[in-house]
Image (cartoon, rainbow, N blue to C red; front, side):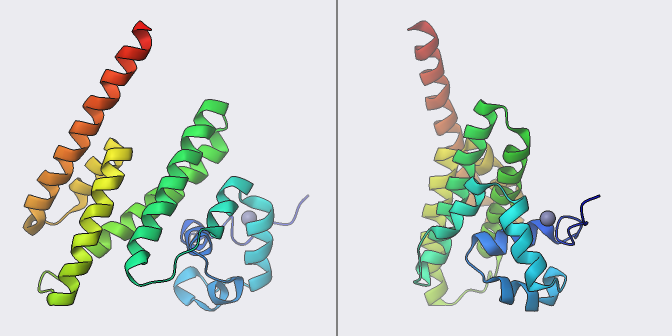
Amino acid sequence: MPRTCSVCTSPHRSEVETALAEGMTFASVSRESRLGGLSPDAVERHWNNHVAPDVRDVRSVEGTSPLSIAERMSALAGQAASIREGAIVKGDARLALQAIRLEGDLLSRLTERLGVRPDAVEEAFAEADSLIRVVAHIARRSPRAGEWIADQLPPERAQLAATIRGVARDAERVEQDETKAATRA
Ligand SMILES: [Zn+2]
């Protein structure tokens, strides 16, 4: 019988995979107690053997400036979304689930960033602006993800939630029109 993987069975599995996809090293994931204090070997073995290659590729996306944290998360979520789409086409449910989990984690982290500090100081406004652009971008690519983000926003962000829903609905309409056009053709 194969040895049980401590990461596969960990309640922190998806957080561990997201941290790795975001570029955290095996050693630092291992040091993070919030990630369950797994051994670096176990983390590395899991990443190499139990995570689909397409998901592992996400890790190679570059991005270093503070502004790009949000953009990078958005890029990763976008990549996860296209992996998910590809996996569904191929009928690979396992890969699709991994991609959905990664995408969901990234989106919820992004939402956390949007929801934080209503008493934000000036420099945070610049960041909020770029986050709004990122979310609008996500909503256009994936209307359902946009709706989901809008649902997570606190009541004091109602205005922003409405904007995101508007973007998502427009994107959905465009998508439906394209589908209709494709069916006719
Ligand atoms: Zn594993």
